[in-house]
Image (cartoon, rainbow, N blue to C red):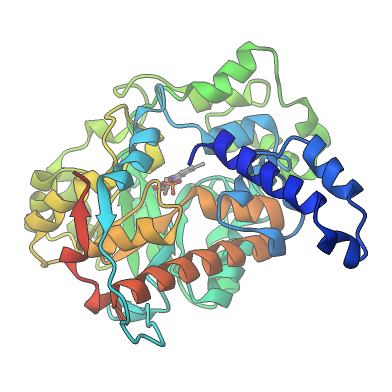
Length: 422
Ligand SMILES: Cc1cc2nc3c(=O)[nH]c(=O)nc-3n(C[C@H](O)[C@H](O)[C@H](O)COP(=O)(O)O)c2cc1C
């Protein structure tokens, strides 16, 4: 149904209600109906929830995060690269599959637990690594770790989430999580020093992100061009911790912090494009941590990963943050699952926003599904409680669709419960 049709039907119902004696009997005046009719109904992304209890789905946390964050930080999270082709494709990819439901399945409980590298997790939904977490909430990575602990969720910590600004950052996250976390290193910055540092924290799984490509992320840069600068950062506790240390810790300069957000060109800087499979061999031989490659989007590369002794794959395009392929990860998944042939687990992220999206990936053979922006929205909007609510909503939605398809466990999710939309 189109939004305007929905609106007119709602108005028709309210008008009917206003004329009904039921309203008078129940002690209401019809004036509130007139007031409701007079006000335009907000779209979901215009309505800002004030507490997690009001959240209807994960998109409610987007608007709530928007009002809490500086324009540059919010734009950086939200935007994709180039003209958002891949960002859009990630969402549109889900429309290419329909879920074939069954009735009277008799399912009364759903077990979402999943085993990865010998450890069992409560659900297949995990937190994808996000850099510079303190830009979104004070001590963001630690607060996320508390939410991960409370919900028994797999958290992949981005090396750049904490290492850039705090030499003991990983230890603080591990202490909050109560156990070592998976750590993600980015492209060519993952050198031997970083690997030894990760090992020293007890990290069981090294995630190597290999999809950063010098994206043309124009959002934050266009804010800068229009004259919006993050002047408030100097007075804001959330900002000074990072921005006052900028020259020491990163390429971002204190006077033009948005510059890094729009780097163009895959052969400039330290991007993964310059790496090759000998680098994978080198890293594989350097450590006994499990090695997971994040950013694989083609079957041939998945087969090469298996050949090079990689322990797992995350099908990812960085949430549309790094390329202009226009190809959603859900569309890449079947060829990767087929190339891997069950030899190693295939995880996936990019664009997942609801239980049905997650279900579709699991039915296509994914072992686990990551979310990036949704947990950052939750964190930015309501801290730990926001993250926990995002996870709770996604789990409830996944539970509903599993029960409706007759799957009481992840193993019972059937490939033929998905049909391509004709
Ligand atoms: C603001 C932001 C920062 C990110 N930082 C990292 C990072 O440091 N390392 C990494 O491997 N992926 C990073 N990613 C990509 C996420 O791990 C993940 O692949 C992506 O967010 C999933 O898509 P979604 O946001 O649509 O759920 C980042 C994504 C966003 C939106």
